[in-house]
Image (cartoon, rainbow, N blue to C red; front, top):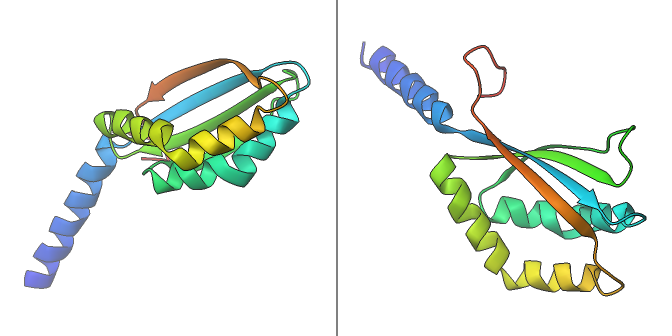
Length: 126
């Protein structure tokens, strides 16, 4: 009986925690010809730093019909936590050094679009 109650409580806690998770869809529009530099920066530095700062890497894509574009989804424990994650990431000296080094030969990103999303009840991602 106690085992069932503990299991039920654990499942409820996991469900409630998952309901607060927020996903962020980000689209980076690069300076023409600089997509490879952005991809290298993400591959070599950014994705690791995201994890360090509480951001979960979900997926990364390059659209076939939109040159100079990188689209990705990350997730945060909550919307409030997302702001804290980004503030910590942007202030991280390792990130600043990687960003500055990657832009030594010129600016990479022209524009960033960000959309925060909550999963639906029928979504596989929660």
